[in-house]
Image 1 (cartoon, rainbow over the protein chains, first blue to last red):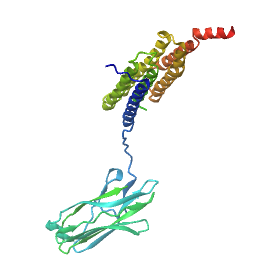
Image 2 (spheres, rainbow over the protein chains, first blue to last red):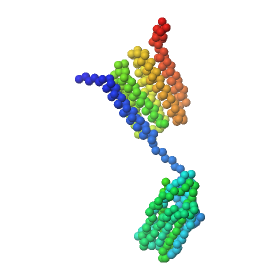
Image 3 (cartoon, each protein chain N blue to C red):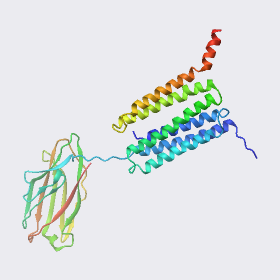
Length: 185
Length: 161
């Protein structure tokens, strides 16, 4: 049987196939051009050693991490007014928050009872508290703080991280290591 | 701009050729629109392969095989133009084809190839821009030659008489 297509039908078939091929080509080309790129830039929010920067502490490379060696004496509340500053070097404001990551000795270890509280306070340039981040103990169990609400650090400003250690009367030669993340948005 | 843009232009040229030859099916072989559709589809395959091996194939290699595919598309356009002018001796249609399809396509293709080479810096060999310019001039001459073909002079004489 000889099937004859009318010219218009043939044209519409070719046109439809052309549209499909053209769209598929454009989609493939677009997917090639939409490749993600990654650029590494210097951190805009950095740590800066404060006036009370404890001895034995260090600010890491690129000022993106810091090791704070805070001390405590038995049955004493020891306050560091300005151990550390958090500085916004950008021309735009940035939001940040403190988030608990890890602590040792872990809950359940007998050494935990040497500590009563470890408090951190974020203060603005004028010394007004913007939020607190407190670790407390009950027996040998730590109560870790919840993630702070985001705080907006204005462009070019430095805020203070205030720290306080409170130890038990029986505390004796023990070290606690706390890892805190600063999330910058 | 990626070199694959040239392949996409070439594939679109094949699609246009397919549609035009479908409209002119009494003057060209019946299978021609489908052959051009297959050629356009091969352009799609070409783009897929380029995408899959984007990291393995360097840019110079990708540029040259895309230029080659564009060359095939342009050759097809010129071939259809010559076929219309010689086999069917349809000068009017050949003139229209050269003015409306061949010449604009050549100009756009040369500009695309040249601007890609310009954007990418050292990718073009030093002889390519003059070669492209010469090719454009030749095509312009051929197109004008077709436009001012024997029938044109015959018609001019007829008007004068």
